[in-house]
Image 1 (cartoon, rainbow, N blue to C red):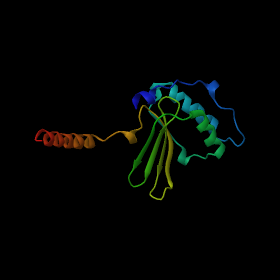
Image 2: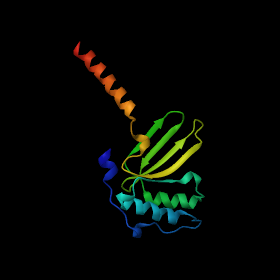
Image 3: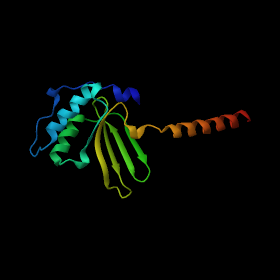
Image 4: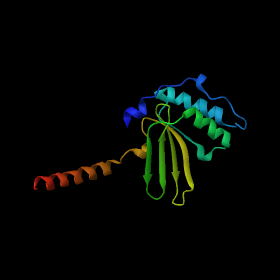
Length: 141
């Protein structure tokens, strides 16, 4: 997963898609995304689209800029989280939905792996304990 998330090249501003009718905030957001993707010192960074006024043209413009990556992660709990790698290195599109599939969060995360994907230390300790139990059980067989 790590190799797939970091394999893509860094774009320059000449790769911005052509502006489309109805564009409001897509262009400044695109410049912000590219600046953070290009400079690891500016990472991690998050842009919460949920609270921004965006037109459908803005969303399409950003989707064209970011492209599609090779990783799709789904996490279920109270609702569902969809984490998709984009074609740009370290850029993830994160959507969290409530139990009725209504949007809770729509954001771009610029980081090697979104925090939502990482296991909590207590989960890792619990997994280690369970694996130890399985190994002991296998040794008795």
